[in-house]
Structure formats: C-alpha cells, structure tokens
Length: 138
Image (tube, rainbow, N blue to C red; front, side, top):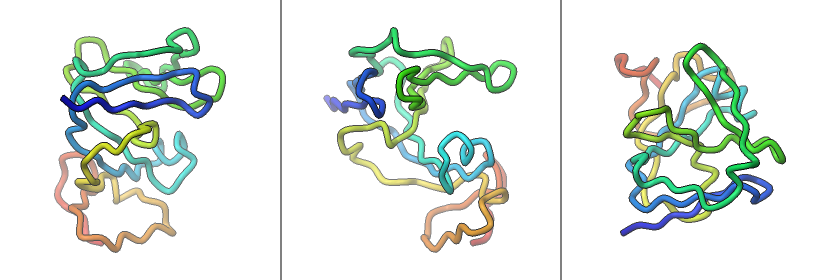
C-alpha cells in the first residue's frame, strides 16, 4: 500500500495518503494562477478515503472563493492544504505539498485557453481549452 506524506510550508499541517495518487494535472486558469502565484498550478488527485490528517488541523482555516467552493489553507504560513468537499470520493490538492514522490507524472493541461501569455507549452501532453472541452492547440 502506498504511503505518501505531505505538509504545508511551515510544517504545521501534515497529512498522509494511504493509497495512490491517481494522476497529476496542470491547470492554467486565472484563479489557479492567482492562488499559486505561478504560471500554472499542478494538482494531484487521490481518493478521499486514503487521506488522513496527521497534525495541524487546528492551523487550518477556510475561505469560500465562490458559492459552494471552499478552499483551505494553513493560517500560519498561508499554504493551500487539502480540503475534500463533503461526501466527495475524490480529493484534489496542490502536488507541491507532497514530500514524497507521487509515482506518476502530469497527465494533461487544462484551461490552456486562458493560460498566461508568456507560457509556451512545448510538451506532448493533451491540452484542453477548458475542463471537458475539445483539445487545444499548442
């Protein structure tokens, strides 16, 4: 059974996945760029049943970024941390939180139609203009 550890920047919040990371994806939407402060954000997907908080639950606070969409972050260092929607079988979180190798690479790019103008995608990964829409060019 896979056991992957993860933590926030300051180490107050620590978690473990007791199952595999299903895949990684790069999101180029403006919200993810703003939240990550980077050209794009890389997210890991795993099963919620495999997610366990080891420490620092008391350091987490939440923010409703849009109706029904809640994000969580460490109130000490500001790192976004995993926060599965109630009843969701799947969990997505910033892959940079992982302390261990997830054992998978990035599977595709999403929202490339709104990517940063300086971002050139030179890899051969599938590229989508939006989630579930037809593949984009370059």
